[in-house]
Length: 262
Image (cartoon, rainbow, N blue to C red):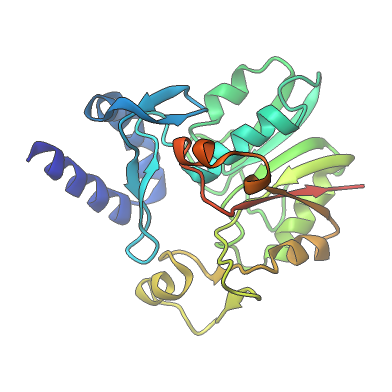
């Protein structure tokens, strides 16, 4: 009964509170939530803890069960990105990497800050945990500065994604790379946009969340290419076993796009 009440409160807060407040409250939530989910059926490679199951997450339209780590609050996309960085990149080993992390995720922030090989800067429009604040359409930083840029689940919110991508391209060094994850509907060939859809309720119905203004389709790599990037794909189905996908609770069929500046 108690666990059921906690779940109801969790879902209510998740879907009603503004993002800055959610970020602050999550630091309190993480201390008692893991005790309710002791076990070894699922595992988070980021915090390296195991649980009986993960928490549910998402809007009423795109709600998913057993996906949110109760300790560090990673989702499928966070765990996939972490595994890619660990197994397929030099992010943890190359010395002197200059990194810009836009809309920094709480699960990554303390870990990346501790890395001695990184010159690490975070930015966001309003997040209380970011170092600097700016509008992504006009980044107030110099050209050719960063080797790596992360900007996840932002492009579905902004007015002009191509302009934002071009700004990220501008501040990157030649030879640099970026990860810009977005919610993606693989049943759609083309990205869905409609400027007449403005109410939070309608946006949730059409774009999966109340503050989304588009829903990207299978053409998302082409958006990155329009901004100047060369795109390579990392398909988790080609790199992880069915058992690993289930244990880490990854999203089957998800593709991680790596955007390169040549």
